[in-house]
Length: 142
Image 1: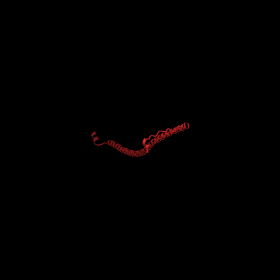
Image 2: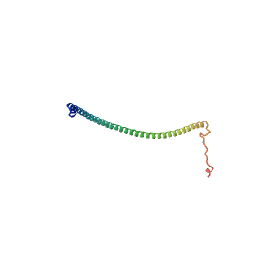
Image 3: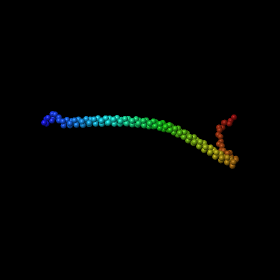
Image 4: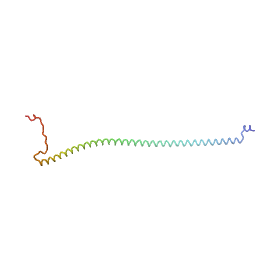
């Protein structure tokens, strides 16, 4: 009998094989569906990543443009600063010259005020100190 069981499958064995085949079939269908969902998720993820890449590229381009504008503005301002520094130095020198002339004029006015006072108080003295003119001896020969 046992050899007979091995040779011809019984209905119980057939049911078992059918049940196993049915489980395999369900598992295969489930695996295919899972793989399909995974491919769809992966595809959606790739679309999202591409969209993010485009967004960040546009942000980067805007930043590069702003950096270029700021650099240009900085260069312009730096050039203007150099010009202003040169003008400041020129004006400082001019002011220094004007102060020297003003001091000279003040000293001259102060001296003339003293000379005027001296000439009023001492009319016999000349108002300004004259220095003798030195000439060569033969200049007045005829």
